Image (tube, rainbow, N blue to C red; front, side, top):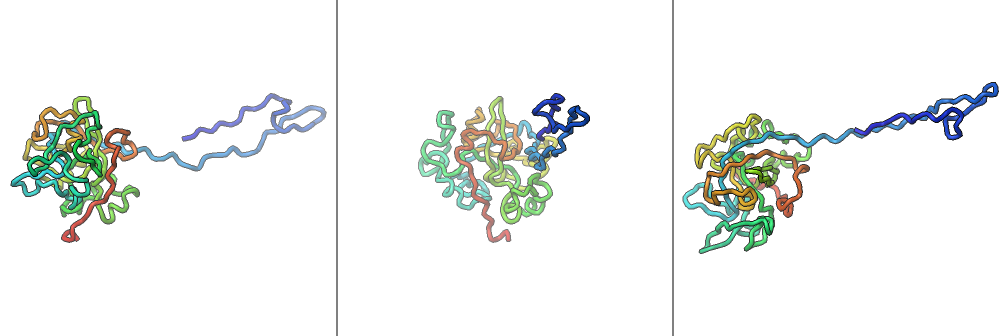
Length: 267
């Protein structure tokens, strides 16, 4: 808040001091009654601070990936975007033998893919709360999502996703990176207790080493995962962050803004 100070009094009889009047041959100082302006603009609210989730097992996934035998394993689409691969710009990696495969990423080009040009942010992830197509999650999202009633998200609250495109800070062994939520999972889709918990709750997922999120190849490399793309052994710390606090980095080179698409069956 801006500070305001009363003007220091001038020396008696100063030509630049308060207005002078003659009284019996003496000069008397008359206080200046001009009101001191005050500010009526309140300080902007501080960005919200969200709690950390620590040592969470993470797997990796990528746009265009297809996992044989998995009912929800195709990343050609996401729960928020039925045309995810098309809108992203293609396979987030390299196509080998007709299949979309992950590729090594390096800091030299900001961990971006080398064989294609993404049209959306390659720093993406998922969390197990689908507020669009999971009926449980959608029914409780106004109550559990901390930013649900922030005026900036009014359109998403009315008819969209409060999760899609939201920013997350991730850290691992001294590496800090940022990404946007672009899908839901792994395997669980209404885990509000874990996702929005304030006491470092554990994921409800009991599969793939109780993994609590999937990260993209860009985030995998940025965080220096040590077990590759097909492992559930790497662990990360993560927390939600307000978009105004996201620092510049390769994750802000392209920011995904397209809204979620609801299927007709969800009403």
